[in-house]
Amino acid sequence: MATGIRLEQRLGQSLVMTPQLQQAIKLLQLSNIELQAYVEQELEKNPLLELAPPEEGVPQEATADTPFEPDESGDRDEPVSTPDSAELTQSDTLASEASGPLDASYENVYDGDVPAVASAPAQLGEAGPVAYGAGGRSDFEDSDSLEGTLTRPKSLREHVEEQIALDATAPIDRHICTYLMDQIEDSGYFTGDTAEIATNLGCEIAQVENAWRLLQGCEPVGLFARSLEERFKLQLEDRGRCTLEMELLVDNLALLAARDVAKLTEICEVSEDELVEMKDEIRTLDPKPGLAFDHDIVQTAVPDVFVFLDPGGNWVVTLNTETLPRVLVNNQYYAVVSRKMRSRDEKTYVQESLQTANWLVRALDQRAQTILKVAGELVRQQDMFFEKGVRHLRPLTLRDIAEKVEMHESTISRVTSNKYMATPRGVFELKYFFSAAIPGTNGATVHSAESVRHRIKELIDGESIDDVLSDDRLVSVLASNGVMIKRRTVAKYRESLRIPSSIQRRRQKSARI
Image 1 (cartoon, one colour):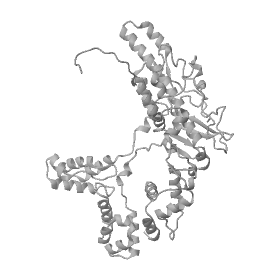
Image 2 (cartoon, rainbow, N blue to C red):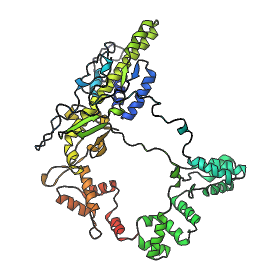
Image 3 (cartoon, rainbow, N blue to C red):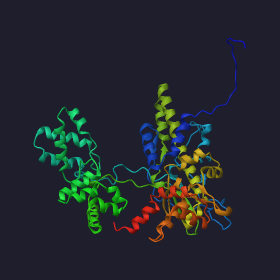
């Protein structure tokens, strides 16, 4: 083979993810709450973007002309009531010729044509179920008054600091106690190491341990304990009930949780009646006293899609427009600024801002169409679940939905991530409707894993003390109901439901504690 330098020309194809394509993928997998935060950032950076004002009379629920009507034949190809792209209106200038088409690879992420450009801002809010939500609400509207911000709940640290100011008289003790407060969890457990803290502070270990014991005397009793057993003993000592028998019971909480009465009565050297009384007192103790000062608001799942029955008995799928931002492109401002631009940098910046704004509006619209299309197909595939419950949940994979809506599996995965659907049966994550298939006996219809888990829970909930079902028995009962499943699979599903074994359940049913 000859070696040397030569010039060659080759023709090849490669897929390159442009920045806009990467951003489109990111938008698709964001939840509505995350999307709001993203749009707010774009509003701050792009002067041509603005939030649409709230419109009165926006229809929150609307039915399409072709609702989904499941028939007895099991044909699930009828359309679900999702909006037509021609019904969508976004702004007075959703897109312009200057912005150009979306990236050529964009169709791999989103599906559907871009809606026609609206011509007047008066059409805002006249869209169907996928019209982007109320938006435009003032940050100060319905906010707390000044008087309502003057007080707030006391935190755990502030509560402890008030007691340190009274109990720790020496300055060195107050300094160490303040340092130790940073080593406490929200539940009240102490996670620090006294030897390491003494080294960091340059003091004796005895001084750190004295300060730590001082903190253990703070209210509520049980703070700054290293373990659950130590916390219970502190609370029992405060009540004057920390006897030798109680200490032995606290040291064997694992046996108490397993309800091993025989072993506990032997260890504690008490009768069964006395053990019941001791257990009742243990139940009155607080395992996490620090959480009494935890005032964080629990965020509930906000649905991205609504599913409901219309008066005609048809399933209707709509977007939660209340959480979707409505963004507009301010072409009037662009026209004013364009006439005053002088330098090339200014023209480039304004032109790029216009293209970015137009792309974002169109991307948000296509995101909404894609979510509705996938959600509508999910409702079509799982219509028996909505009508009769979880026992009728069908096996379903990402590929099944991808083939129906003619998208890639990765797109379906992004659409269903961090998205929730509000239904008459509750709020479910879109991922919930995908379930593995479990074969039926004698070639019968396959069953979804979620429906089998539900059957296992129903069987265990209905068992009596004289008839506790083992995993082998559960396999036999399910086989008689047409479900072919292995014992290890039953055990895996039972453990995922946090159901103890048959031995533990029998012990719980027979024990008095």
